[in-house]
Image (cartoon, rainbow, N blue to C red; front, side, top):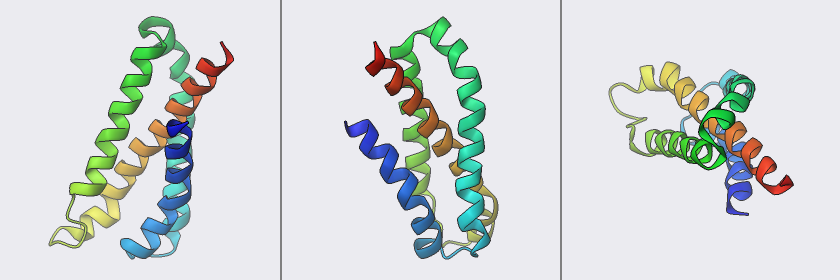
Length: 116
């Protein structure tokens, strides 16, 4: 249940975080969730192979590790510091790729685990 809660919170609060906390232009409010969706789509293609060779539990742990890295980047990077132009212009899309991968990865594996 906590996995589904974290997925829903991530999907809902990313646009608010981009708009209110980072104060990035309005086009990024649409582009960052789109980046998350595309990265999640690409991960869902290779997820079947990953589950086949590694197993669901290891695959889940890999997805959780990616989520941890993405969350730590959001927490630890100095978004208002001297490198804020680079971080807000480019690095936020890398973080969005990590969080989008995590979202699709974990939700797909969770769905597979509940069906069995």
